[in-house]
Image 1 (cartoon, one colour):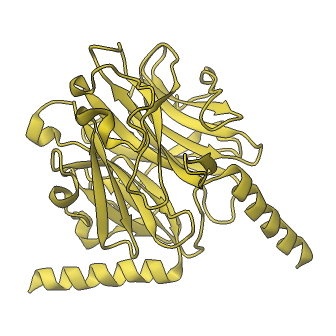
Image 2: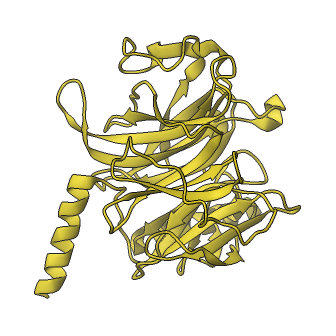
Length: 350
């Protein structure tokens, strides 16, 4: 018992210093994702992390038109718990290819909820320039924001060490790729910070530039004390690779060239999301194999250091799986979603 308590205590101390999205729940898993049947956010739940059940038949659990105020479509949903464990936060790409008929977009949506079902949100249209950010007079990464072409695949990492201008500590690092064609030649990774209310956002800063396009980053802090990033690189030999850094917002070296998701051959993959099964130190890495027709959403194995990818298999039980994220659930959360889904399905039959 003393060893168990000490381990838990050290884990809490470690996270309070280094940061990481809060992990809680020992009953099941939530797969929160963009649906391949449309540009909306869907849920699926699982007890084992591999076999899933759609919530409300894989239909939209959030009205995209109410929350994606730029284009009315939500892509690339990333969900995690609020920093204090009270509620949930989500980010999505505000984008609707079905409406615009082009692979460009102009902003992101920040959402928060107390119950996983009812959400409030704020939309950030980057074409409006620095006035939408908390620090509009800070040095800007662009001369002209009105020409922005992409703000893609945002994700969240809680950083307790971030210090705001008023001295308050703690913020959500929101990291994503951007492209402004008149001012840069390829998609690069940037980051902003959202405050604890999840309604205010700082101006973007460049996270790194490796000299070629990079998108769909996924960052986790591992037991080795390093931040590990899964990322799709489109320069050199394209694919999903891993990179590491001692600091969250700097020091990202180029990916390990000899260790990447290579077992899919020439099939194109993106949208990686790493998670751990309960009780395991190794990792699972999910991604969309988008060059297939029909597409395949795969989950493979990785070791404790997010290396040595192997044994890919298709996700089971999900209608239209696409770019998304995974979160552990408590028994109460799992049953809440299951019961809500059952009620909604019954009402739909009437």
